[in-house]
Amino acid sequence: MIGSLGQPLLFLVALGFGFGPIYQKAGGGNYIEFLVPGIIAMSILFTAVFSGIEIIWDRQFGFLKETLVAPVSRFNIMIGRTLGGATVASLQGLVVFLLTLIIGFRPHGFLSLFTALIFMFLIAILFTALGTAIASVMEDFHGFQLISNFLVMPLFFLSGALFPITGLPEPIALIAAIDPLSYGVDGLRDSLIGVGHYGLGTNLVILGAMSLVLFVIGSYLFSKIEV
Amino acid sequence: MAEIIEVKNLVKEFDGIKAVDNISFSVNAGEIFGFLGPNGAGKTTTIRILTTLLHPTSGEVRINGFDPVKDPDVVRHSFGIVFQDPSLDDELTAYENMEFHGVLYGIPKKMRRQRIEDLMKLVELWERRDDLVKRYSGGMRRRLEIARGLLHHPKILFLDEPTLGLDPQTRDHIWSHIKNLNQKENITVFFTTHYMEEADRVAGRLAIIDQGKIVGEGSPQELKAKTNSATLEDAFLALTGREIRDEKSKNIDELRIRHRAWTGKR
Image 1: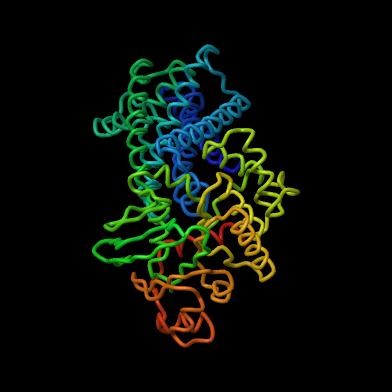
Image 2: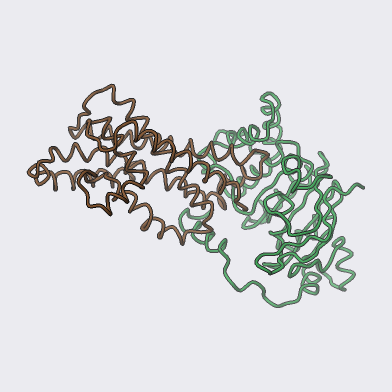
């Protein structure tokens, strides 16, 4: 767990203190504050996707085989796996959040922490389900690099985690609009510092709906696994 | 004796290639049955079909009287399996691994506790029940998996290369545990192995599969007599030829190499 904290924190410190002054000058306000929700989402995203992908390993060398051969429905196993993975990813996000408090970040209201937690958990569920869906159709790790570079990274970079979605050029704004993480980040940011783009309600609904869809797709693909 | 595993005209095709080509064999209840064959012969595919992990292309399979395709859950209650690659949860203790299996198979709490104790004592792991599995040696893990596989009182125990990579003492130990369980609880044992001397010693009957077809079936004695061989290994080679098979690396081989590299000796 400690190792995977490195990257988000590095991003925060490097980008935050690096771009901070320019962002401030351009009238955007406190960049570090802006960045924190994005970084929290980042740690959740990566932990969640990769916990789902661990299935490839587990399928052959781990505990998963034992569950596949047991008289338990695949759906139940999928729920268990997704909730478990999502919990771990959420905790990861929470740890990052606590660390940002140490650096000096202050959320703009403590009631908002509840909504923040909801968004964190939804992001975690969505991407654990995504990771599971992908892993269910991959036979080995060769596709892994591809997925990492061409799916997870773009999802992250084009989600408004690192820059505001307001005022983006059309094509990029469009991609951000279909990126589920955008709604997660936006919702999280809105909860924590009151800066949002889509509106809390919209974020919640869209994120919730997308999570459900991905969960269903993930369950279906998972149930088709043959060891 | 009743036939507890029946396979009739089983075919499994992958992309037009027949991994299992119209095989038929049966296993009697209470037998120790060996399923042998060179690499790539169709052993693993057959076992996967028998254990509900794969659907046949055509043919009939009956495990304890039930069809694994139509009644997978009933079939799953009928067998326990020890896979070739480990399937324990390293971060849990041995006892917890057993517990979890009990929960998965719906064994009531009180019965669970007693059964776990009985089985772990049988495989001599009860003293180490609270150790994390990652601290267990290869032989201990295998014994634990065997105990676990029997927790739900299955009629059949499938063992895929149960003694692979273990030293002779451990191998001997494991087989005496298995034979003990076979005699005491009348469990049918269906195993695969490449260790021919072992198969010769422990198996009541064998089937040899090669290139998707059964090329020999019978007791070790019968197979040796039929091929005029002194050892089972010679009989095996007589029936399957001396050519090396399977020169292409499979996904699973690559995964195994990676697994060993990442986790050290297992």
